[in-house]
Length: 149
Image (cartoon, rainbow, N blue to C red; front, top):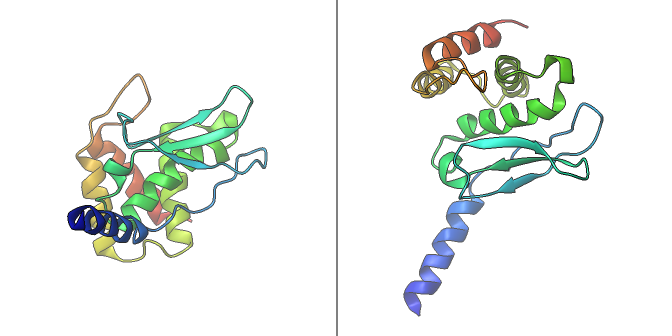
């Protein structure tokens, strides 16, 4: 019993220290909730439910261990899929939107953070079906986006 209480307390302390994602609003002005799904086979996805409600589903097992600014990048990336004009919604544009968003509000601000994020991104495989660039090209694109207003 003591172990169960200790484990529950540890889980609470661990999860409560994670920064909450920034609020997300769709292009049409609808607030977009984040939903946690540890069974998701991805870092996160942006969906629209049958009733038209946009949602973001994130895997806490994937984003949880990441540094806060990397986690916020992923939240902002998925938010971008709802926030961008539908004609501008692409993986490349979502990446650019995300890094600029976290830069503009000061979540990512120094070279070490940028290097860590880009190193993380550069290890990811690309996927021609989803429009994700191969990791090194994706990291280079993010670096260019970060450096432009």
